Image (cartoon, rainbow, N blue to C red; front, side):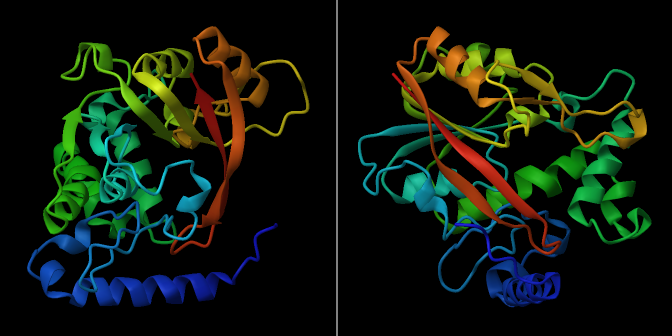
Length: 292
């Protein structure tokens, strides 16, 4: 069923109501710099405290093939950001390991692209309709920007939920040399991760090595009409205009490559759709499930 697109004004008003309620809550108001946090996900923390996230998966999480009861199961999520899926799996009873980058210095970037340019791009993604000069994160160090974009929001949710999630810091490429080396998980989740990587082939192979059950990938597929397996390059040619996005593998690639990695099948089981807050930008991701 196609998305019924609300007006951008409606989405912005909804976001502003959510943000006002969040920042007025005593738990949030007690953090003096919390308005600098970047809320990638909308997370319901209970007691009326809901983060004003860009992505709100609360009504569409059923499109992901997770059991309602995950007691006795394990989940590895790579690229947790604010942590919606990690916290949701824990709520359902799973034992969860969450992986995030150690710093923005480990984020894949084009050769010759400076760290300063990368940080400015992240600030632009945080406040797409505002001049960069008005975003205080532009003038901050890489470490401060990392805290306000990733670690601070996750840790705030972690504390509010009294979570027991195991949080580790690693690139996806280095997972085999990390604290979870040699372990396997019932579910491995890659949500909107591959598009930001220079080497999605190595990344998929690494994630697959940890999956004893299912590898789940939420992924934008290229609009290229071919049955041939391809990696479609989307990074453009202008160094100043990249969008931190590099390659889009198509569905035939995923099917063939995952079979080569030892999965018996890969199916597109659903769609992950919605509208970003507050911009109103529509997103539509395929949910791909590789099964052993």
